Length: 180
Image 1 (cartoon, rainbow, N blue to C red):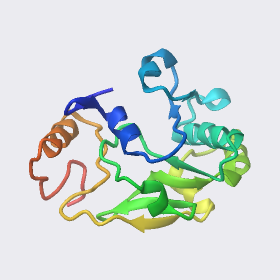
Image 2: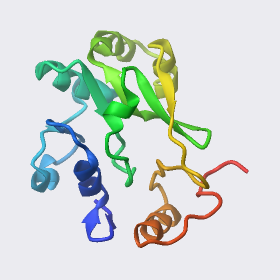
Image 3: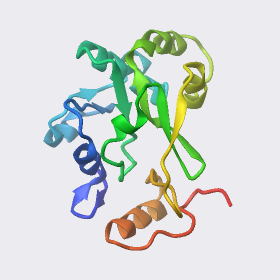
Image 4: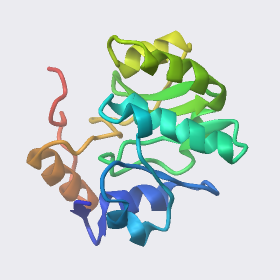
C-alpha cells in the first residue's frame, strides 16, 4: 500500500499486468483491497506457512478458472515489466536479474498444485527455492544494467530508491541488499 509516484506499489503491479484475470494473495481484512477490484485469496488451511501457501491459493484459484499457468509477483516489487507472463513462458520459470534469482516472480504450472499441497501438508522447511527446484523451475534472465530490475521494497532505503527511480533518477551501482 506504499506509494511510489501517484499510486501504490500494488496499483503499479496491477497496471503492469496484461492478463485477463488478476487476484491478490493476502490474509487479514480483504476490505483494504476493495478498490483494486480483484479477488482476494487468503492462505486458508496453510495460513502462517509462508509464501508457498499464497502460491497454492493462487494455483487453486487459477485451476478454478480453467487456467494452465499462474503468474506470481510479490506485492513489494514495484516495477514488473509488461509482458512478464509471456517472457517467462513456458512454465515453470522464474525471473533472474543481475545474478539474483526471484523464485516468486514466476510462472507456475497449475498442475503442481497437488504436489505443493502435499509439500505443505508435511512438516519441514518451506523454502520457495527448494520447491521451485523440485518442480524443475528454470530461470529466465532479465538484463538490467547496473541494478536488479525486480527490486523488492523491504526497507525505507529500498522505498527511497524506488521513488527516486520512478521520478527519473539514476539507479545506483548497487541496490540495497546486493552482494558486493
